[in-house]
Image 1 (cartoon, helix red, strand yellow):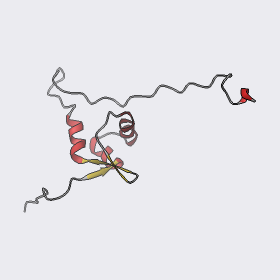
Image 2: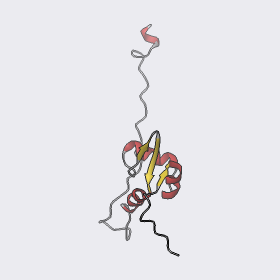
Image 3: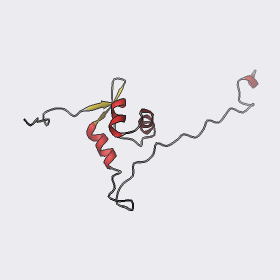
Length: 97
């Protein structure tokens, strides 16, 4: 018996399930969301959800046929933030008293 899923709405995954789907940690997927380098997502109330086809498209954007394949795109790494700069004595709260 063949199931016909074309009548069903697209499947959505929350962050923990999406991270397992693409093989990345939850935190890495969150960083991609923050930096805008990850797959498209939606917010339903306060919940972040990913469409399965968006996750697949994002992973496929980095697919390559061989190591020197120059026609393939690249899935960027989640960028790191620069470290916070500690306040100088002139701007710290203690020096203003």
